[in-house]
Image (cartoon, rainbow, N blue to C red):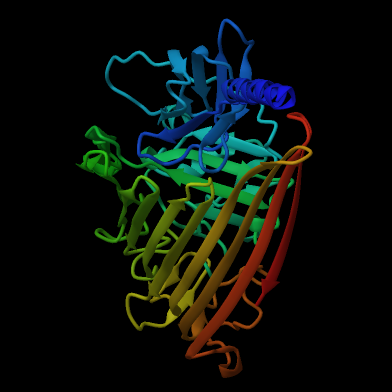
Amino acid sequence: MPTLLFMRRHGISLTLLLFLTFSALAQTGLTLLITVIDENGVAVPAARVLIRSPQLPGLRCETDFAGRCRFLNLPAGTYRIHVEKQDYYSLTLSSMQFPATANLEMTLSHQQEVREVVNVVESPPAIDPAQISSVEKLSGLDIVNIPYPDTRDYRKVLNFIPGVVNDISGQPHIAGSETYQTLALLDGFNVSQPANGQLSARISTDAFRSIDVETTRIPAEYGKGSAGVLALNTGIGNDRYRFIASNFTPSFQTKKGFALDSIGPRITFSGPVRKGKMWFFDAIDGEYENNLVVSRLLPKGAETDTVWRVSNLAKAQTNLTSRNILTTSILVNHLNDPHAGLSPQNPIPAPPSDIESVYVASIKDQHYFSAGELLEGGVGFDQYNLALTPLGTLPYVLSPQMAEGNYYLSSHTLARRWQVLSNLYLPPHPWHGRHELKIGVDFDWLSYTAEFTRRPISCDGRFPTGARSLPRQCPAHSTLPERLLCPRTARAIQHLRVALFRKSTTSKAARMPRTVGSLATVC
């Protein structure tokens, strides 16, 4: 009987001790989960989160691919939370009761040009310890505010990024490389010309959120760009309607009387289709140039080349659910130059007409899982058309003074690319440091069709003896021999490329990240 009473008393004491112990562990082992999103509900990765309380010093955390950040073993109390990221307005929550609030969602707004009085705080630039590659960037505000020639062409502002130089045709060269060696991405999809790798797509400069350039220590997923990556990131609307119109004032010229010179208007309109669910964005960019050549050699009516160009980027984002986001976009470019290359030495009707068009479309779906994984998949399409057409069938005659007749070459090219991509981001795992894993696949199908028609070139006999402008195959008063002519050439090329990549980032300390990647390509 005494033994039984002793066991009962000590059993109750042991049970009470275990209960108090687990209660204390439960109180000290609470977790605060903070999710950071933008104004459209898209997760914001790599955002810096700082929490403070009277009992604890400042604790820091960085959000993962799903925009999540966890603070473990927090004691109950009142906390002050501050969230910031470059190119976003910072956000501060002065008082938050914990554990009454264990899951917190905070919204960061993108920095953008505003024409109203608002009180906002810009997030200062900071060193990102998880950033392995060398990245230079221009924000959307930089692109709008930096003074540079020809603000209609975003490629001209790339000269302000260290390591980027534009050639005479406006093509960017990163780290001294050729343009085709750079991977150009528009909102994550390859937008370079499929046949020659040139950056030909035109986008309104008011449409950009940022332009990023990566030159060294490039992740394996960007293995197609041996010289670097040029990422063009455009915006999307939010729950407020915004309308911007600029450059509507034309310029005039007085070379031969008073006439219109050029005008390049830009219109940007964005807002909600359904607040909190669906938004749109439309950026239109136009250009008209009246190129007037002053020369006594040109007859009246043959000295004008009117060039016009239009570009339209339309986007829409729909939040199907809080964890499923669908984004679509389409970009259309068209250029019409009826007398390409008009000059006193190349008068009408010698110059050909140049008509170019670009069509870029994409659709991307992002799904966030409850455990923190992010799965995205998308399809992209782009098509580049070029038609160089002579104005007639007259013989093309070259002389030291000028070209006569009609241009000798007629070319029609069509380049297409279909792109399918899928990426899986796994949540960070703490095991001897912080581990992040990304796995993806990228399919590219390219096709190129070209048709050329060449006609004879005649040379005027007034070339001086030994002049360098006299082609070796073009004797005076003659045409090129038939063996040098190709009256009609048609060519079609198709190419399929499949790339699989894996990227793993490990950091044992905030200042010592390490990234290991692998890429497998099948053509």
